[in-house]
Amino acid sequence: MSKDGREPIIESNGNVFADLGFPPDEAAILLLRAQLLAGLRETLSERGWTQGEAAEQLGIAQSRVADLVRGKHDKFSLDMLVRLTARTGRRVEFSVN
Image (cartoon, rainbow, N blue to C red; front, top):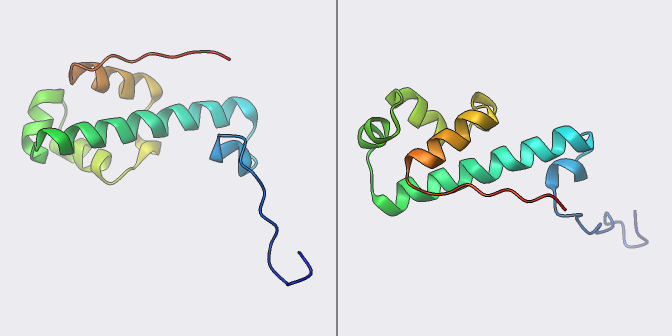
């Protein structure tokens, strides 16, 4: 703690999961899943799809779309999120630094 009683501000390394103490490999996967999920949610919103329409377009059950909308990234593998993103017509690109 600082002299004024507040927690110090620590600059992020760009991955909140690494900042929270996850091992580097797990943090990388969690970040990718979170980014893909956020992109899917944005796409659904931009296109104005109902959950039923999104389910039909993505080829999944409406309950799975509800999980997407609620941000439940733990219910989707990285593979599935890549597939769903591709089914929206968007490209998925990864880079390694």
